[in-house]
Image (cartoon, rainbow, N blue to C red; front, side, top):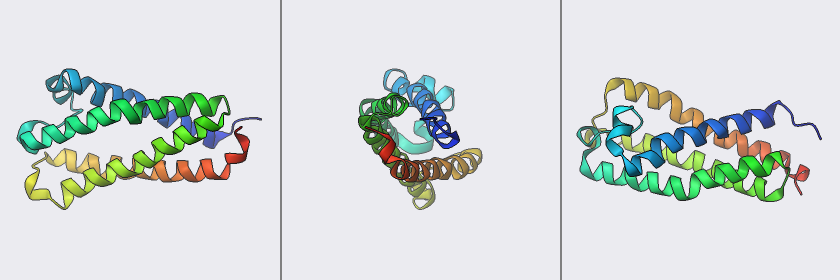
Amino acid sequence: MIKGFGFWVLISIAIILVIMFLLGQTLSLFNYELTVAWGLQESSEEVGDVGVAFLKGYAFGDTIFYIPLLVLGIIGLIKRRKWGLYSMFGALTISVYWPATILYAIFIERTAITLTPDKYISFSILLPLIMVYGLLGMLYLYRHKKEYN
């Protein structure tokens, strides 16, 4: 069966997310300051020491759960395997969940976090797009679930 445009959009964005998360999340577990310098993590001045601890916690969770689910999902979907469908669906639920928590933290609890204005703008655009990707990706997988064995 020929894989359509929607399939390749789903896979392409998943690959971009894997690369982003390896650089921004996994690397931060080993060298947090480097990821801050690259603009991939927030400094303790922006989020406080407790915020950094939570961001490292997210990084750990992303490294041991989210990234493997994305990778398994990519491989499994390309091979048209049901386990790929389930793995990607799991990753897509995380893709909806984590941006919602970050958006809440930076906008509802604004006094606790002092991000630079450009981060408020970029987060306001990027995080909802990731959530939409997760929701549309789940819808796509639900509609095409019979294609996987």
